[in-house]
Length: 350
Image (cartoon, rainbow, N blue to C red; front, side):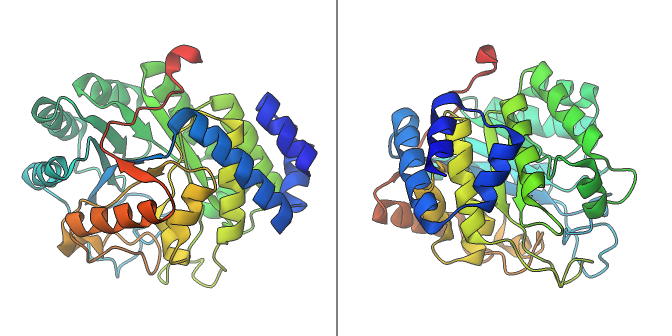
């Protein structure tokens, strides 16, 4: 397996058969070798810096009914909320004082936030904090909507493709959602000029090694600036509540592979990793990740943005969350960096 890791580091490309063989044939020894190579590449481009993003989960209403998600439309037990523009700006004020220079507005696909409302919110944040990056993660919208948000001041957009395979996508999502449309949104975002982030769940129901190989081939094709992956974690109010969670072991292995595939990519060590293991986020950094996303949302709504069970940091104030992350990163030889933290993989290179 080591020769495939070496090939990946040198060429940034593998065939589907090679990806599948590497995933299926991984061992603890292979993983240790991979992580060593991934850290070397990560340090070459990003040194020992860990970028922080201020996450603002501003609505948990969603028109979609994805079978794995805790805020799916048909979950009658979800306690719904929306943040006002003033509340969102207050989160940004708090975050800015703490040193955050990227704000991530994340929410369900909520029709209340029309293009006009989103443009108003984005413009206000951009005007108040011109030295900060604005990242959106609000799902599938039209090309025109994406263009308007970009022109209002949004810099980045996160849209996980979740799974490349159309049949697997149908297992996880009801009609009319489709893998093809999801990917088209990503190509639209790239064309407009966003720094684009995508990603997938690890260990999602009925996922195969071939599915993951397809995901990695798509990452090579799209060449995004950011990739967010995390283990599938079941939610008790969804059809997949009995399905086993994805593992930290496979998630870390894939983080290392993605670092070698896309050396300059921004790669978060996600909250989901920290949820399935106490040191999950630290392990993610040691596998090649270089971003963490502490929560700036008001503490009284954090427990309601529950995409999966047992999510961490739902009660901590923003300052507590940042402080504990800084300590965790320092303990493994890394430092949280106050910067926008733009990807070195720019659209101009694509």
